[in-house]
Image (tube, rainbow, N blue to C red; front, top):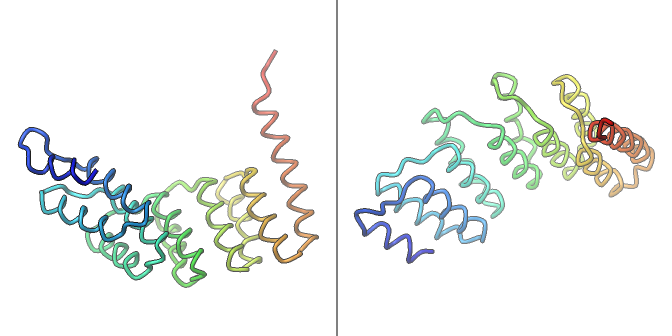
Length: 198
């Protein structure tokens, strides 16, 4: 992959573009080769390729999975300084990473959501519930269901499984039972939606 990239950079009729940048940094980042990811990013940027929001989401995700929250914060600050608007994917990546790190303070990004026009989806709320569950913030995790209701978003099987797993890890059987009831209700409604009309 690296050899192909070098060849592209040296040839006139096969110049790399932002898709090349994103594919390359995703490959190196997801395999944990952060130094190579950074070198490719810098090399492609110096070749005149402008990063997009997707590029920054890939960088955030890669740094988050590598546990490099300092560099992740630097990317977030860069995005803010150069007015790159966050997407739902950006929020999901940031919440997942800082949730895994147990850094609730960083999850203050939720305040920004209130002032944005981003349409929140079930995947977003599932990331949020998972982050709270991993940190042992069960009151906040349960509050995600209320937040979903306020935003007109329905929980799915993953929402229920995520919360059941968190409650089970602490032996909170009463809450597990409540969630199992919700899971059955979700499955019934999903079955009704998928049932063919004869």
